[in-house]
Image 1 (tube, rainbow, N blue to C red):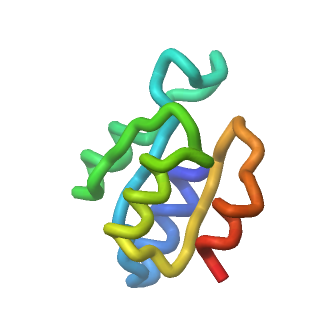
Image 2 (image 1 turned 45 degrees about the horizontal axis):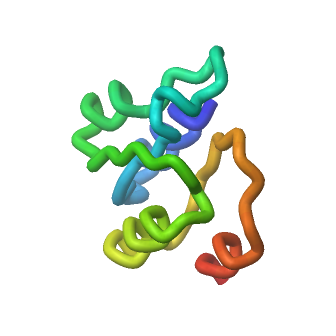
Image 3 (image 1 turned 135 degrees about the vertical axis):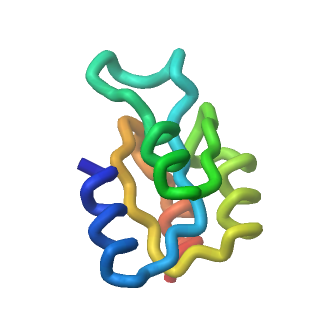
Length: 85
């Protein structure tokens, strides 16, 4: 579902600055990640272990996104949510 939402945003002229998925070993069985979608759309792709961790914060600080679209199997911490006022 995240792929179709992201594609629709791009179709409307909104820039996608990155795609982030859980590392494949941590994904639920029905989840395939975003690597193929990112490659097809020339979007930088990252795989991380923890959406609430330092690595995700650094990705967001570098990319400076205006919008965060999530299809995630982890609960977001308040600190992660607060990165997007």
